[in-house]
Image 1 (cartoon, rainbow, N blue to C red):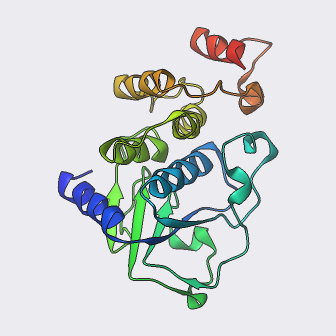
Image 2 (cartoon, rainbow, N blue to C red):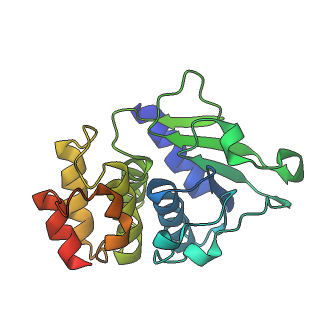
Length: 212
């Protein structure tokens, strides 16, 4: 992720007023957490924001603040900016592009992309998750609060396999600690039953599970 690209994205978020924030089909903790967090940060800046994923939000993620606002029917509206989060390919958004008019398309992702598809692109393959990138954006906007922290921590937690996957870096843990200090709500145990093996969880996961 280049500092120049990061600064361009920050300037666009400050300059424009209407946003569509979208993510991929089969939404997961990272995609849902990142679009909700960015939405709330933009609304704190008095921006108008719509949220879209092509499939409904899974039940185990519906505890996230404002998750009920996410629509699954492609909007017919004009926006200043469309932001694609965690999508890796615009086809995964399933947007009806002919129904949408916009000035700028922003592509933000932690998956490697041979050919980023945005007018502005913020691609960080070393990040644990798109939520980690969105954290840096929101931190630069000085907008992290408890609800935003809850969404971002959920995104990071799920995409790192409860901090067990190799994409968990020391910096990832620093960010998670800051989000917990920002009063993120407890991670729901329903997010990681598939990570259980004979009732076993890693010590870090077990501590988080006990907070649920």
